[in-house]
Image 1: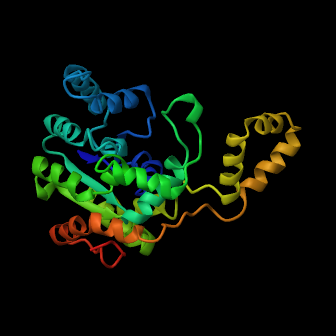
Image 2 (image 1 turned 120 degrees about the vertical axis):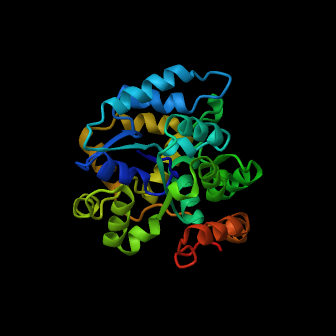
Length: 301
């Protein structure tokens, strides 16, 4: 049994889409939710302990998922949302250990500044889960960073403290059951990455190389689209007018917005140093403990 609990924005979706859910030696469940059962498992694992959790329901869901796994396949529970809320990380890890004490744990990491930048581009630049007058408003990168920094260790800045989460799993499952790969290793040498991942999982490396290849998901939106999105949300009447344009015109406009350079935000002065101070000690300990080439790939160490 392999549990892959994240982290978010570290290439997890690519592994799920192009490896875990398609490799003939793997039986994957979790995220992305391919069935109602997968969604219920994810929700049950992330419930608040002592408030709305249901241990018996979780037990039945996990037992059903494992029973569906053919005997010649490796069961893999992959779900990066399990480590996406620092408030729930420890209780989720305990639940997983209770049900799968002999599981091996796989983590994927990404340099923190790139992970944070990517998270903002996909999830942070637009407000959500706020009262209606403020919903869908765009937030400048610097303002978003300041808010995230004030609210650490919760939120994405807390998630990016990889060592804290990995230590929770190491304490429960044992250091020998923890394996870590870097997204940067895949970019540097796709074949070596596929071979190492295959060795960790105990699956055929040639098939892994073929399936993964140079496959990627969740590319950043173009700068054109981000500007358009900001304007239509600031001036909703103009967006409603655009929605009534002829289909051909809208198709041309959509094609225009998808072309051009992808959105890439840059950190304001001083922020790389602030983030380095947050993560340097944890990164250094991870590098020493697990033999990770973090310095070689530009992590703060």
